[in-house]
Every structure is written in structure tokens, then in C-alpha cells.
Image (cartoon, rainbow, N blue to C red):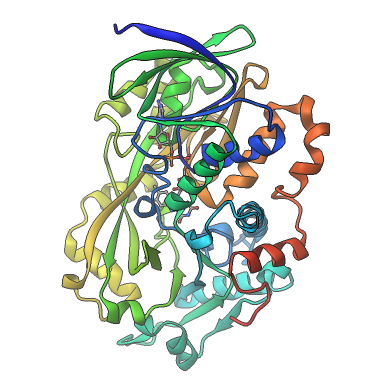
Length: 488
Ligand SMILES: Cc1cc2nc3c(=O)[nH]c(=O)nc-3n(C[C@H](O)[C@H](O)[C@H](O)COP(=O)(O)OP(=O)(O)OC[C@H]3O[C@@H](n4cnc5c(N)ncnc54)[C@H](O)[C@@H]3O)c2cc1C
């Protein structure tokens, strides 16, 4: 064991340098400029795991086009509660980013306007899309969304999708001009720079290898991955923002709130093309329906992406399996995460989610020809040679047992707090980076109830449950995005 160098004391220790820690750090530095904040990241830069540009689909999820936020009820009506909530939460993210851009602290190039479209296929799909549109029409964030079944109009919106489409399968589209494409990796590094300028310690190559209770707070053992030297950091508050590795860190720290929870990693793969002709013929993010039995995260979409100034199209996701909890994790991650108290959860999840299991097995067995066939559901003229298969990040799905049944918490993130709010963590993977600000404000509420009154005014602006349309309009203008309600 290498020698442990002297102990440091901080007010807030943020484990991991992804978009969640970076967002929380910026919020904390605004609320408590006097606090010592440390962000410790094991890789050589922040934002290289799930938050990296190619590790996710870069959608600014705002509920504008994703069917999985608007399920159909038994009577055929559409429940838009989740879409509205996510639209409002994304507005909170826009506000924080715009504040930083307006202050000259953040370069806005990480976010770009791109239309968000929904594709309904078959009579059921068209009815669902129409119902979605009608149920959202009166909400100001969704008022600009247009619906069409007119083939010519559809061809002008998404030529790549209509070109070569034969047969008489009914289809419909919706289009909102308010959508965004976001490079969350660049955003994360920008936020970490803001934190450094505000006096926080942002250190890379630092692996938090052990976390233990220490008095009213926590003590972390931190190993420098280059030198192998270890140091001890004591903190009054710890946020475990370790992405896919969060559950194992909490398990090892003996956090009782995660007893009985399991985790299962699913990686996403996409087909990608940079062919300028194809890119020119698809100027949006187009979301379809998930296949029967498929988890919501597998909703197929065809996305225009801009990464490092270059445009690409992305189609997927296709589920893949890797036992690692981080892209750069260990092959033993899954096995090591299995604790005796979580075995009933794992067994119940396998028993009660047969359709999901069948879907995953089917995805794993998928051949390149089958992937091209799925792509042709969106791009009828697609040629396999124009598209390459790329692997995105790991989504570590949370498994839990409720009412005796095992469930994969495929949708929604779970804020965990422990030890009187001295520890906070985020489990689950969706809707992800888009809602980072609202989710981190929720975490602050839960971890620091005694400071609620002091922080109320400064936090009000960043809440995901209050919609101030003037503030949204200002934020969109600062970020160079079309105004709410602008014609799609
Ligand atoms: C295929 C896919 C598609 C997605 N698409 C979208 C999308 O379109 N829109 C969207 O909003 N979200 C999307 N997401 C979700 C989004 O990417 C994540 O929710 C978000 O990036 C999670 O951020 P994070 O900070 O929690 O984790 P991460 O970005 O993974 O950061 C965790 C960090 O912790 C570090 N770390 C881990 N363990 C330790 C340790 N012990 N010590 C020190 N550091 C440690 C890691 O190296 C990493 O940098 C997608 C995710 C996937 C996988």
C-alpha cells in the first residue's frame, strides 16, 4: 500500500467529472461562494464517459418528439405529464447555461438549434402522434409543433425519410423548431472551467477508491492514477456523480439506502454516417416508436449531430452488452456489484421482464443486415456501405423490487440521499444530461433542507417546476436558439 499523504478538508467533494457533478458544482459555487469545493475525476479530462459527445445521442430532451414521454392510456387518450415535466426541466437547464454565457463564462457553441420531429407509422402510430400533438397543443412550450400527413410537406421536412418510401402504410410527422442538439462533453468541460475560475479544485487522474463515514461527514481515499500516491480528503458533503459506477461506490461505502438494489449495464450502439449528401437531406432529430417489449431507452431515432464542427447522422440505438459499468471500467464490474441482498431483486427482474429480456437477446443476436433493415424503416434508400457501427456509452440500469416484482428503472433518474443529507448520489440514466440542472436542484433540496430559506431566491431561477416564459425567451435568445413559438 503506497503512503497516504496528509488529509485535506473540503466543504463539498464531488466524485466524478461528468455533467452532473459539473452542474452541481456550478450551482453550489453560486449558492456558497465561500465553500471549498473539490471535483475529482479518474480520467484525464472531465466529460469523457457518458457525457462525452459520442457516448450519448446529444438530444436536448424537452419532450418535443419522444413517444416514450407520452404513453397512450387504455382509452386511447395520451398522457403528456412527463413530456411537460421534461420540457420545463430542460428550460431550467437552458436558463443556467444562458446565465453563464451572458456573463462571458461559457462558450455557447455546445448547443445548436435543430428541429425535433416525431414519426408515427401505421394506423396506431398515427393516432398516437395525433393524440400527442392535440394534448400538448395548448402548452406554451409545445405550441409551435406542427402535424402533417401530407406527403409533400413531409418530404420538405425530412427528404431522406420520404425518399423511396413505397407502399401505403399510413404515416404522420410532427415538427417543432425549438429542438436542440447538445455536445454534453464540451458543456461539461466548460462548466468545470467555470468552477476552476471560481476557485474550486478540479483534479483529473484522481480515483476515489474508498469512501467512509467520518464524524458528521465523509472521508475519501483518493489515488493519483499516475503516481499511485494516495491522499485522504474529508468532506462535510459528498456527491457521488460517478455515472455507471455510482452504485458500486455507494455499496462499498455501506450506504444503507441502496441495499437490495441491483444494476445491469446496457450499452448503446448507433449507425453513423458523415456522407454530406445524406446529412444535407436530414435536418432534424426524428423519433419513432419503441418495438413491442423494448425498453423506452431503445426508441429508434435518426439524428442530425454536430460534433467538433462536423455534421453527422446517427441512427439507433441498438442495445449491446458489456459487463463494464463505465466505458473504461472493468469486465468484472457486473459480477462485483452482485450483493447477497440484491439477489432476490435480480431474480425477480429476470422473472418479471421476459419481454424485455427477449428484446435484449434479440438485439444481441442482430446481424448487420438486420440493423440495415431497421435503418430502412427510417431511411428507405439506405445503403449499408454508407453507415458505420459505433459504440456509445454504458447505461447502467437500476433494478429494484417493488410489491414483490422486479423492475428495471429504465426511465427516470433516482436521487439517493444518506446520512442526514451529507451524501447525495444519482442512480439511473434517463432522461439524463438534459435535465441535469433540475435534478441537481432537487438533490440540493433534499440534502440541505436547513439552507432552503437562505438559498430560495437564488435557486428559484433554476427550478424545473416553475415556468417563466420571459426567462425562457431570454435564455433561448442568449444561446442563439429560435424563440418559443417561432414557426417550425
Ligand atoms: C447511449 C446513450 C444515449 C444517451 N442519449 C442522451 C441524450 O440524447 N440526451 C441526454 O440528455 N442524455 C442522454 N444520455 C444520458 C446521459 O449521457 C447521461 O445521463 C449523463 O451523461 C450522465 O452524466 P453523469 O455525470 O452522471 O455521468 P458520466 O458522464 O458518466 O460521468 C461520471 C464520471 O465519474 C467518473 N468516475 C467514476 N468513478 C469514479 C471514481 N471512483 N473516482 C473518480 N471519478 C470517477 C467517470 O470517469 C466519469 O467521468 C444517453 C446515455 C447513453 C448511454
